[in-house]
Length: 57
Image 1 (cartoon, one colour):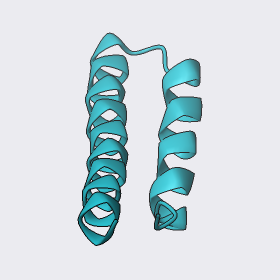
Image 2 (tube, rainbow, N blue to C red):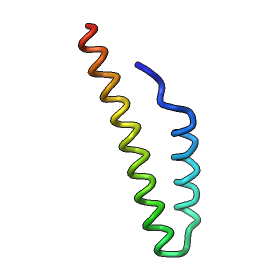
Image 3 (tube, rainbow, N blue to C red):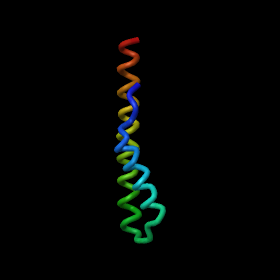
């Protein structure tokens, strides 16, 4: 399995910190959307790696 991109993980942690500190409702909502997108891209990468591994299996 390939490790998730370090940059993606760093971005995810940064956006989570920003979300925790945000007070503007619009900023909170936008940050939630960004976090969901990053988590989905990480999950998609894991599923893709699992599929490749089962094909090689």
